[in-house]
Amino acid sequence: MGNCCCKSGAAGAIAATQSDRGEGGNPSSGIGKGTGRSTLNGGSGVGNGKQGASAGGAGGLGPTDPNYGAVESTSSVKVAVVVRPLIDLEKAKKAKECVQVEPPNKIKLPPLQLGSTNTEAYNFDYDRAYKLDSKEESRRLFAELVQPLLDRYLQGFNVTVFAYGQTGSGKTYTMGTAASVKEVSGKGESTGIIPRSIKSIFAAMQQSRADYDVTMKVDFVEVYQDQVRDLLINPNEDGTTRMPVIDIRESPSQGIFLEGVREVEVKTETDIAQLLEAGNGHRAVAAHNLNDASSRSHAIFTLTLEQRRKPTAPPDSKAPKFLKSKLHLVDLAGSERADDTGATGKQLAEGININKGLLALGNVISALTDRKGRRHIPYRDSKLTRILQDSLGGNSETLMVACVSPAQYNQEQTLSTLRYASRARSIQNSLRLNSKMSAEEEVLYLRKVLIERENEIALLKEQLGAGATKGNNNIRVTAVAPPSKAW
Image (cartoon, rainbow, N blue to C red; front, side):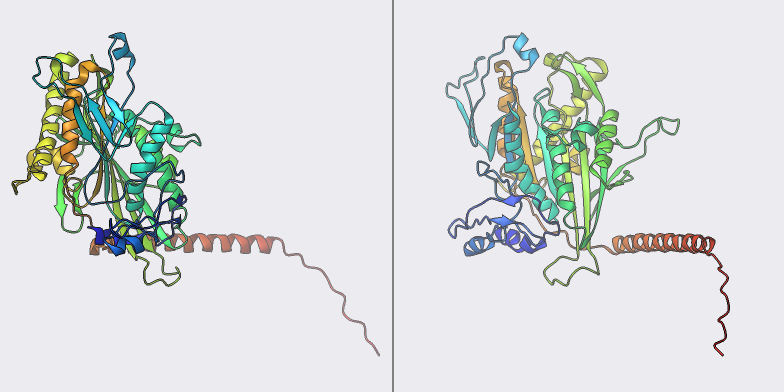
């Protein structure tokens, strides 16, 4: 995998807007981090052995603050644990904190109290661990783990970031799924992963438009009661409650994709913010004992980026001609216990389906990390695991954000989440550069370019015609006296 990352250094089409931070490569560890500014050919600087040291000079995007240490790009699933502060409900119950965070990557839990025979504390190691009690910690999470993945996304690799945890653990807040248009497109600093990602991506996109045709499309779906629903279509906009049928398909060129989903092309941060806000407004939510606005579905917000090098761009044999990458931002519904939530009727049925999907996800993770070499991976056991097939064990660089409550009465649920996250960290993905355009994509692109050129020609003709008419209206005829005879 190190070789793959090293060779991809010349693959980045979009230039960075931030400066790199990093040290020179270490020949023994095979990791090299470049300094300076990343360019159109900026890579991640990861290789094996001596290649890692030399590749470090290529550099990729990175945080500017030396206090931040970006986690290097690898083929394994990366895991961060986020511990939120006590919320009002927990404070009202006079809950005590039981989760101890030891930066940069350790979590400790005391022994379980209720009839447990274990008398030792639980210790866990992850890629990073954060106590998310300030904007600085939110900033650090993004700089150290999310931004490096966005660099890879801009270089033509698929990326997934998903949040997992019990209901009320802060997943939607951490992801920023419920962010408003103002939070995403405003000038102030956003806190969620999604708003920060949108701002970072669009800032970088502006640097590449001189040499590349850049297109971004958005789709937003939820898995509710194990059915895929399109959140960008208002179920009542045509006067009915019918929703389009969305099928999960797979092809050698596209991998896993959704057939029938609405994809919307976006030009600005505001465009994408409006879609996020509108889609979130259609998402299924409900109140119960642990959360006033509990998500009743798994939400998947996807940004598909296509980059095509313009014929007018300066010749560069190393520059990619075409790149297509997908960024999946996933806000999973929280695991629930009916006794804790007090759910009945419809909400109880929703909770059962949520847990079924998460159980299927856990089974996929267990199968992928089974050292006995079990070959069958049960992706088809649920719609959720089928959609995330490329993200877990497939063609994607993936970050799992495990969100936990610090309250002692939630310790059993927290321990379950931490164990779940530990297993996920052992998953190995098969990352590859997406630089091949299918025949269908080529035809669609050429048709789009032809229409754009025809529109430009029509506009120029209209402007020329208007200019000629205006010029004729301004013509003035002045009588000139004949020249006098000189003789």
